[in-house]
Length: 210
Ligand code: B1M
Image (cartoon, rainbow, N blue to C red; front, side, top):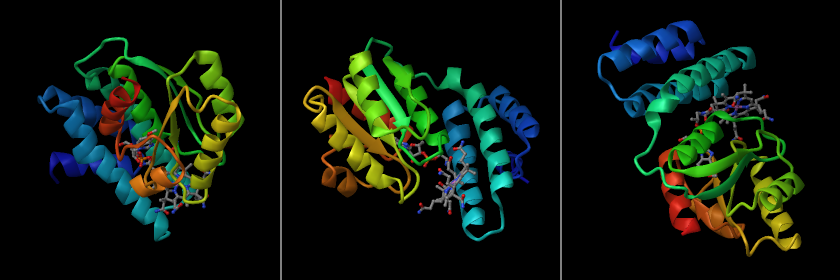
């Protein structure tokens, strides 16, 4: 088995200890954190998703894989820092109400921090009014909404509506993302931006708050 295949297998089988050991070993071989994330960890989570869909993997096993992924991401975190560390602005981020998926959102938050943003992470299952209060209390320029379920995407629209009715909408930009979210959906709910992945989210954030 190649090194990538072994890394992926450790994640898919939810063996966090083995995964972290292999991640450290791969870093020691001079492979970049970004490559480990993009060539092994994210594709392995896609396999987990496919197996979940086909009922070859069940929630407890998926949770083990997700935990292993989070532990590996913790190792990579300091190494994924972007080049520009200027104070870029204030961001409030969360996964929308009804949705408990946080791995992608955590990666986006991490890339934004690395890009110099002050990030307030509200966690998962965040209600529209919580986003509004946090944006106001933190003086955020950008509100970032993540959703992984087609059933929770409408909550993005409700969050934008809540920002509008609170009078904050013209003071903050809204960025949306997550696997089922598209540029067209973002436009349809009057969001200011959509990013397909964590790296492009940090870049887009910079251009939105300029
Ligand atoms: Co769930 N789940 N899950 N799950 N889960 C999906 C999303 C699913 C596609 C799996 C499948 O069936 N193939 C499916 C959704 C189907 C749909 O809606 N069309 C699904 C389902 C159905 C469910 C449950 C309903 C299952 C059930 O209970 N029967 C349930 C819902 C719970 C809830 O939220 N209320 C559920 C539960 C779970 C677990 C708790 C077991 C676990 C989550 C653990 C956790 O997050 N701490 C889990 C997992 C792990 C997944 C999969 C396998 C992996 C998600 C992930 O972490 N990907 C997922 C299948 C898949 O996506 N392949 C699946 C890796 C991550 C790095 O990618 O999150 O896409 P992603 O983030 C990317 C981009 O999307 C983007 O950048 C990130 C990094 O590049 N991005 C943004 C994300 N947010 C962004 C915000 C931005 C910009 C970019 O700007 C603000």
